[in-house]
Amino acid sequence: MNDPIRVLTADDQRVVREGLAMVLGLLPGVEVVGTAADGDEAIAMARELRPDVVLMDLRMPRCDGVEATRQLREHEPQIKVIVLTTYADDRSVLDALRAGARGYLTKDAGAVEIRRALEQVLDDQVAIDPAVQHHLVDAIAAIPDEPRQPAARLPAGLTPREAEVLSLIAAGLSNTEIASQLVVSEATVKSHINHLLTKIQARDRAQAVSYAYQHGLVPAPEAPQAP
Image 1 (cartoon, helix red, strand yellow):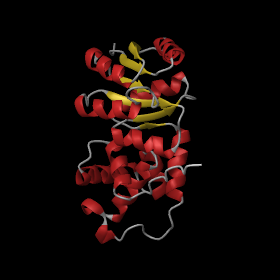
Image 2: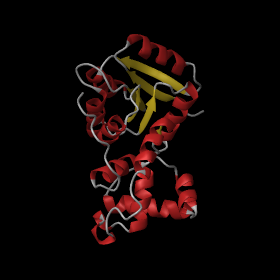
Image 3: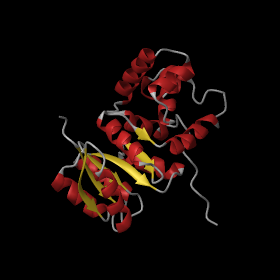
């Protein structure tokens, strides 16, 4: 029998973290090893308990979820972080992914969706809520049809096709969806992804998404204006 997925939850609302722990504890193959009330506590408990995955809220006192994710990524990179929050705006998504989150779910997600996301991040995939993917796809769709950058100016020696694949990864598309959109085989998509990850020196898709935004391959969302 496979070992259970060991999960730590972090949320400043007691009813949320205890309710989430109860729901997850009922899932087969999942073990909740602890609950944290803020980012500082999440970091300390993660270092002590060594969970496989931390389900991290974004807005918490003392140390928020983004900073906690960044510190775990730097000091405990083997621990995966999935953001579980009420915020689905582009800025929150980007901040979390840049900090090192491997998944992003809203609190509308059900137990089955969370279970699937846990499996995906442990399988070195990125798990992004469909509602969040919709925001990112809209951002890609808003780009004019003309080339965003001349091929000669693409960073890290990326080819135009590799840059296109990278932008679709940033939009949250799976290999199957990318293959369908580009009308190529999944094997071809995997080959492009392997090449571009090597060129941009990214370890995984989450880092690739961050790279795409940092280098202008997809537009960064505008910060909300003050009223």
